[in-house]
Length: 277
Image 1 (cartoon, rainbow, N blue to C red):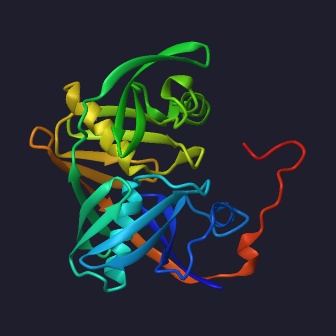
Image 2 (cartoon, rainbow, N blue to C red):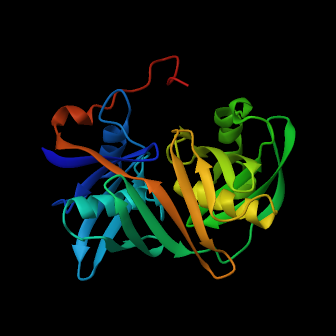
């Protein structure tokens, strides 16, 4: 049996292990994160304490590490507060560097971090029989941001997102793909196709920051910026891009804890007609 926590950050859901005796291997993580078959999640993170800092190791649902997941980092901070490892602030060491987090209340956390070293770069990509102009940006992990002037209900997030995620222009790592709309300068709407999950997720913290940076650079947005995600939660991006610091704040909750049993490791092969789309 393995003690676990389940957390959600604006719709991004995660499994978490606190100071496990041994880290799970990629196959185990994939099994645990498989929806409908096991507990399910967009990813899994491990937390352990070191002097003055909490170390976070994050893996996507495919079982492989990612340098940064900001909604996961906000959830990791909330779990550290829940476990009484910290009071109102905590330093988290991630694969993308150290991030400072602060507790707003029992259901909201803010993280403060440096802005990307490079501005968004405009590129055109051929996919699905058309040319798509978007903006490439690294926020711990790679993102491609598409401005979608129509309502996001029309955005082909799964089909076009998958095609762009694997496009050769982004190299072997691929990219996350964000479809965004700015109804006003202080409001952004976003849907994201996430690599590692290989589907649309209900929220993506690094995608929110990448898309906010694009909006600000194009004069379409200003900080503070209210952001509506597919999960229905509102996040806030604040700070000073010129000053080199910004923050992401909003929903982050510990929703359950328990024991993962042997049945959680079931990993059936896809049927002959292939996995469910």
